[in-house]
Image 1 (tube, rainbow, N blue to C red):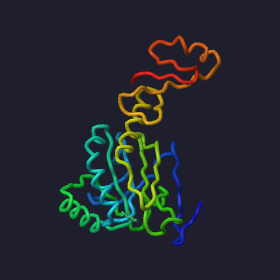
Image 2 (image 1 turned 180 degrees about the vertical axis):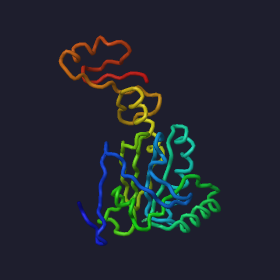
Image 3 (image 1 turned 60 degrees about the vertical axis):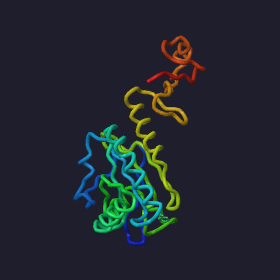
Amino acid sequence: MEQTETNQQVQMPRIGDDAPAFNAATSQGNISLEDYKGKWLVLFSHPSDFTPVCTTEFVGLQEIYPELKEMNTELLGLSVDSVPSHIAWIRSIEENFNTNIEFPVIADLDKQVAMKYGMIMPGESQVETSRAVFVIDDKQKIRSIIYYPLTTGRNMQEILRLVKALQTTDEHGVSTPADWQEGDKAVVSPPKSQEEAAKRAEEEGIEYIDWYISKKDV
Ligand code: BEZ
């Protein structure tokens, strides 16, 4: 396992892994991963408080928060700033953008959570967390990971689309094609044998294109 200059272990969780456990101070009190059991969680890191791109992201994340909640999904931010810094920044966002940030933000001053989740990219910055997004399902498995660099703000609609796609996969046993949006047809799992492939064209209720690609309404 890789070590940082301060001898902390760097972990890089992967899709399908159990989400690393944590208990952390946040802008809304202490929170552990366990508190989210039975809910989906979008755990994201940002480089630091009081920075412009991060501020636009927080406004955007608060805008999509009600839709995430409708999908049984919570939001939890993280940076290596302190709780007072988070509080001051959240108050400034409210004053300047008329936006009340309702989700909690981890104050990861000792980088304990950032290291467990591989949120620091030492080649980009040793001191700031990059723009990581971990989608963790209701059984606390990591289902998707997105990384953006310090200088690029994330796309809020893509975060919503990703959670919706993952939940649609779980609910209907389908995959979702490129640029899929809620209401679009989903992809039926490809046949696993020649016999299944031969029968695919006769299946009811699917849009058959070829033996390996069919779609259906979900
Ligand atoms: C920003 O949020 O504006 C930002 C933070 C770190 C590096 C570059 C930009």
